[in-house]
Image 1 (cartoon, rainbow, N blue to C red):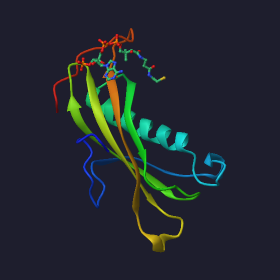
Image 2: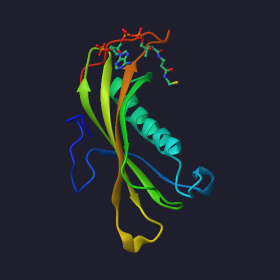
Image 3: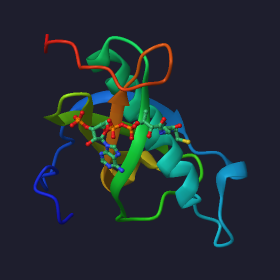
Image 4: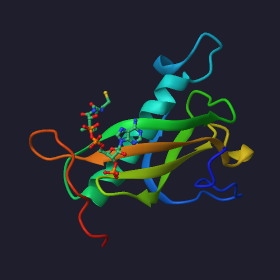
Length: 135
Ligand SMILES: CC(C)(COP(=O)(O)OP(=O)(O)OC[C@H]1O[C@@H](n2cnc3c(N)ncnc32)[C@H](O)[C@@H]1OP(=O)(O)O)[C@@H](O)C(=O)NCCC(=O)NCCS
């Protein structure tokens, strides 16, 4: 990544926010998992992290970067790890790493993607609101 927020490491960075299976319905024309599905999982994972940080409603305002490092296969266990790397007045940046455990368990875990998502805390009218103090 070009952003310093996500650091290359041999182990997942951040907290496990979401874990799921990749299914045959999520494949692309090559038979691997469709990138859009993976981005969706990353957005959900970041959303879970954002909800906790914002203590309420928030929305994705931008995806600053997404990298697909390795293909994801059908039946892989997909794990999304999140880390809040910047807190602004109403917005926050959340780094997401995606790691997979292949269907064939002998192959070990590997990092398959990462990204940087921006969320904004919103009030009941959908307007930005100040982030609560950090817990
Ligand atoms: C998120 C939303 C409420 C922000 O409203 P806005 O009037 O643009 O808000 P502001 O200009 O006051 O910006 C609010 C914060 O967001 C940040 N921000 C706004 N647009 C941004 C962008 N494209 N990239 C990064 N940060 C952005 C601002 O820097 C500001 O951060 P700060 O308060 O920490 O300094 C509004 O754009 C919105 O509702 N967007 C749709 C969100 C949505 O539906 N997401 C789901 C995907 S479909």
